Amino acid sequence: MRRNRRVKIVATLGPASHNEETMRRLFEAGADVFRVNMSHATHDNLRDAHAIVRKLETEFSRPIGILVDLQGPKLRIGKFESGSIRLTEGDVLSFVRREAIGGLGRVHLPHPEIFQAVQQGHTLLLDDGKFKLRIIEASDVRIDAEVMTSGVLGSRKGISLPDTVLPLDSLTEKDRADIEHALSLGVAWIALSFVQRAEDIAEARKLARGRSSIMAKIEKPSALNELKEIVDLADAIMVARGDLGVELPVEKVPGIQKQIIRAARNAGKPVVIATQMLESMIYAPGPTRAEVSDVATAVFEGADAVMLSAESAVGKYPVEAVATMDRVAMEVERDLLYEAIIHAQRIDPEATGADAISAAARTVAETLNLAAIICYTASGATSLRAARERPHQPILALTPIPATARKLSVVWGLHCVLTDDPRDLDDMVAKASRIAYQEGFALPGQRVIISAGVPLGTPGATNMLRIAFVGDETEDL
Image 1 (cartoon, rainbow, N blue to C red):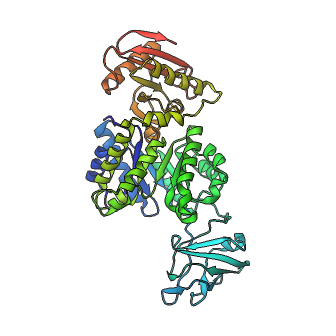
Image 2: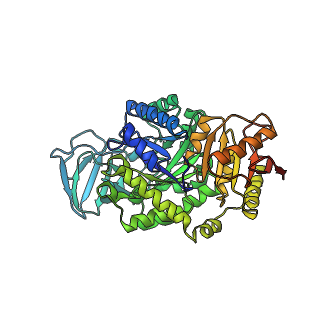
Image 3: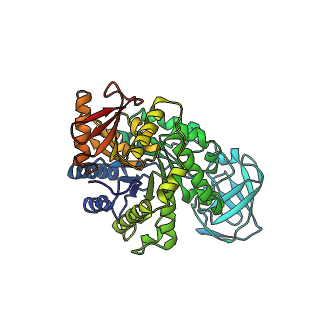
C-alpha cells in the first residue's frame, strides 16, 4: 500500500481504538505509526497492540512502526482534608515536606528534589498551568509562594516548575520496566519524557543498547537550553506542545516549534509535531479551521510526522481524525507553494560522503526529472540522509532488516520495502527497478536513481550512485 503523501501520521491507541478492527481502519485511513502511551497502558496492552500491528504488517505487506511513550516522573501535590482548597490572588501558600494532610494555606509536597532546586523568584504551576505562583522564600523543608491565580485547587494535582532544573532522572523505575518490556517485543521507537538535559538521552540509550531508537520529547523549557546537544544524542525529536504551552507563554510555542523543526532537520533527525492538532475531533466529526491550519503549518515546515493523541485514543471519531489529517497533508503537498517553501528551508549538506551522495542524488533526480530515488540501507542512515534533502521525487528505502523498516516508518517521504540483499551490482539494479515498478513508483522506460553502500549490506555512508531505466539499461555516475 502506497501513501500519497510524504509526511507521516502517528496515531495514539486507547480505549477508542485499541482493537484489531479499529487499528486496521486507522491504518487504511493513513496511520503509519501506532503510539502506546505508557501513562495509561499496561504491559498486556502493549503486548496486544504489538501482536495486532505485526498481523497488520503481514496483511498489508508494509512495515508499521510502534512508538512506546514513557510516562516519566510525575510530580504531584498531596491531599487536602476537604478534597480541595480555594486559592485567592495575593495569598501566600506554604509547601511543606512533612507528610500531613493539607489545609488552609498549607500543601504537602512529597518531592524533596523540588525543595533542593527552587529559588526565590521562580515560577510554580499547578493543575496543568491553571494556577500560577511565584516563590518568595524557599528552604530545604518549606517553600512559600504567592498566589497569582484565583480558583479551587484539588488534591493530587500536578506541579511543574518552568524556571527550575530539577535533580531528577528522566527515567523512573516504571519507565525502566516499560523499556525492558518494549525491547523484548522489538518495538521501533521509545519516546523519552521529562527530558531536561542531554545526559537524560544518554541514560535511555544505555538501557536500549541499540535495540530500539530513542525519541526525545521536548516539553520542558530547560531542554531548549541544550537543544543542539539533545538533538545530537537522540534518534528523533517530538515537539510536545501541550506541556511546552503549560510551562511557557503560549505565544512562544509556534516560534519554538519552528526552531526545533529546523534543528532536527539540520541534523537529519526525524521530528514529530504532537498535541492538540485536531483536538475538537475528540467530540466532533470535523475539525476547526484553525486546527486544519495548524496541521498544514507543520506540513509546510517539513516536519516528518504529525501526531494524534486523545483524538484517536479516546475520541468519538478516531478513524475520521486520521482520514482528515491524511487529506490535509495531501492537499498541502499539492499546493503550488509547498515545493518552494520546502526548498527555501533546505539544509546545506555536511562535509561527509553520505551527505554529498544524498545531495547529488537529489540534484540529479530533480535535474533529469527521474521517477524516484531508491536507497539500499541496512541501518537506515542512507535513507535518513536522502530524506533530509526533502527531494521532489519519492524515496524508496530497500532493506533486508524489519527493525530498520519499522524505524523508518516515521521518516518524511520514505516508502520502505523489505527485500533480500542483492547478490551483486547487476542484481541491485534489477531488484530496485523491479520494486519501483511493482510499488507503483515508475513505469517501464522511466529512469530511477539508485544509491547504495559498498560493500553491500554494510551499514554506513553511501558511496555509489547509478541511474537505471526500469528495464535493463543502466548508467553509472
